[in-house]
Image 1: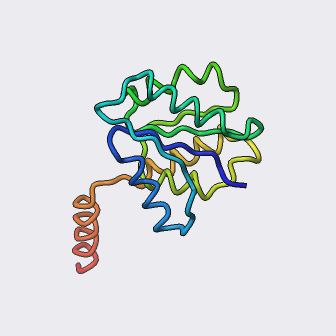
Image 2: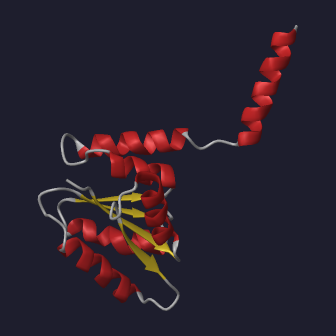
Length: 145
């Protein structure tokens, strides 16, 4: 069964995530997306989110992933947590995290633990490449002695 995941972003980032996931996994409809544009009112965006949630299977978790913690996308989605029992809200969208959410079975077991594990793995993959290269050069230099 497909995980119910909505990417919600400012601008077209959510659509870009959808395309990138398709390129990497080959899955055509791994996630859904809503892109918040300058012309969109908060009421319009909230209505789009509700429409998406109302179309999901109520027996399995629905996950909304937003781009900026405490940004407008997150603040528009957060009040819906009180209305939709199986809704999970994650913020700080990145491609690695989205791929992990798409490829994990989130319908069985403790979804909260699974999401927390995915978030930790995602954090662990963020690093400053220059530092990594400098550490490798220092290690190589030490080995020469």
